[in-house]
Image (cartoon, rainbow, N blue to C red; front, side):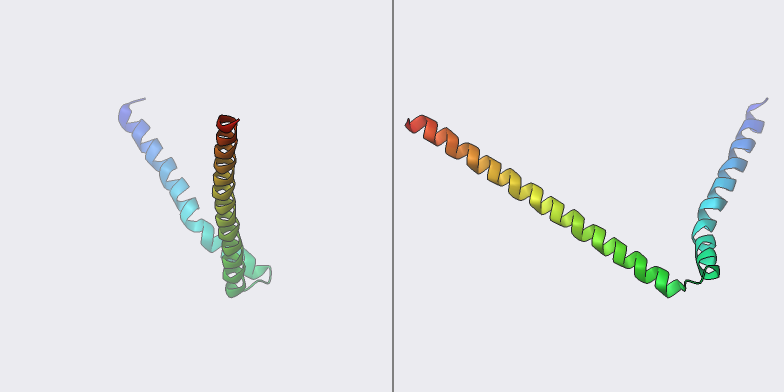
Length: 85
């Protein structure tokens, strides 16, 4: 095989993958519509799930920061009490 035939095959497979990825959302919406769901319902549920995930992520980040600060404060207290003993 020559280099040009390899690049042609690679380009052909890349374009098939690109077509599948580009067609994914429209195929998904079409199948959901056939199943009886409207597009507005899909957008509503997707937004709801996304919002819940973002809230959960933010709460986890806050909890992680607060617990790290509490651990640092507790460690500082232990160090001070050891020095005073």
